Image (cartoon, rainbow, N blue to C red; front, side, top):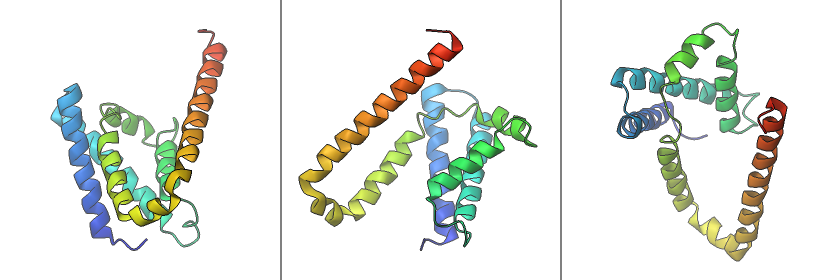
Length: 151
């Protein structure tokens, strides 16, 4: 990772601002709830990024460490987890996808030469991944509906 911390913090702050604006415009709510929830999510992201940069742990992707950090901090029984869940429940995650997809598009734009080399071969791979994700998500949903006795 060649980015410095000031760039990373700037990107996270901009993302948090976009999330707050998207949440307020889409779902309403109080600005104070959105500010605190977004700040907590940003702090968890920074903590996950810090963990991902530790020498022995940098072999796995950053998204793994950020997700694992968020999951651990929200497990019932972990000190402060109830407060974290209470503060972040005001953040709807659908509007968060907009800035994430924008960043992904920008990242793809930087790697357009590599994308061109893949040519048509990327299409069947993308279709297989999308189909597999859909089928696995559907199977898991069906299983959980049966376990819960809903269906």
